[in-house]
Length: 445
RNA sequence: CGGGCUGUAGCGCAGCUUGGUAGCGCGUCCGUCUGGGGGACGGAAGGUCGUGAGUUCGAAUCUCGCCAGCCCGACCA
Image (cartoon, rainbow, N blue to C red):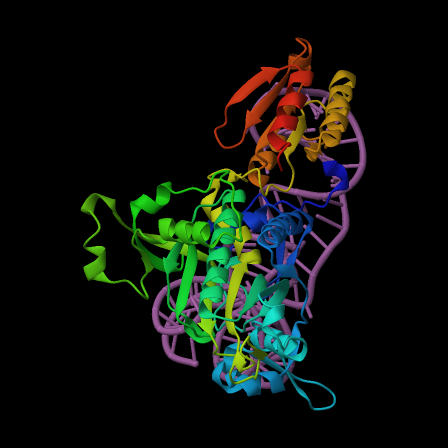
């Protein structure tokens, strides 16, 4: 993409309403624009990041064998009356009445709807196990939206639902979600720690929240520093291997890690003192096993091998997709701007032409732009007639992991410069070497 | 939902106390000079002063109502 043809309305000054880094930087980098309290438009670059995150979530869900689908944003009230949640949910749920005076609601989640779909079409244990998910906009009428997309009223969320015959099968589904989530966050360049959590209005017994450590997090967390060192790396995972998944779950959940809601001082005291940590965290996902909580009252029954009609065991599992954009920035920024991890960056590298209009510089930039594009790096070429300082400041702000600097001075020696945003380290090299280097970095993406 | 604060140009703000018909910086547009960390000079566009009513000869400014947004708390992913 050429910057002169893009829409990137960056701000030099900080908008007064933005308090925390991610909100401030998303506004300054031209990623979002507030529409009303807790509701945002996603401008091209913000949307690009959102779509990348969404893509990673899709890939990892499908790798785990979960099936993508799409349910509507507006749901009939009847379904929620059946589960008893129409009254239980409270004013957070946005209620709407259509012209026929039918009660609708803008879905804050989809347990009722998915259960309805399930009971209509599935009646035998032979059709199990089944895990369906979708990525859809949700609405919760927060009393006090704040922190930009981190706590908006409208938000994009992946929510998945598993249907299993037995508690054992459902626990396997739970573990499958835990492992796929660990992998999802790791691919985005985030360290998210599963913590034993409280179940809230979804209800249920077994539940973990995934928290990204950040000073601006909404939850207070307590954990054993041993979890910080855990990583999945490139280990081969077989999502049908129950023992392997259970072992990974054990590995991640054995060290103490809880939010303030479930924190237990006595247990925490058993952690060696030098490994005890208390910090703040941003919740970016949660998994639940809740058994027959919805299947029983809503009649989601299947026939088992003995010919008996039994309620299915269910769980639901969410990832806050839009919130992740904010969480990523909270975890990855400095005083100059955002520092995108390569897994989610909107563009792979920025090309800065220091002397727009100079024949040699223009030609070198065009050449690099074409070759990096062909190599799948997806570069953003700053071809504006701005001075170097302005171009550098913009690149620092929008946080692309790599900056390619092209100017007459270097070109006279046959070199261009490659700078890593995270460390600020620069290296001069020939254009050929630079293309090869970036192509290799992004080959896996 | 309790407490606090703020609405003036795209963004950040001044002006309000003491009423006289709106200003600064950034950004935007045009031009010239510049050219390796938000450059300089010259010119230009852009405002129902959140909104409604009241007081007054006259309201951005004073009074009351409403609306919106932000912060702290409670709540929440």
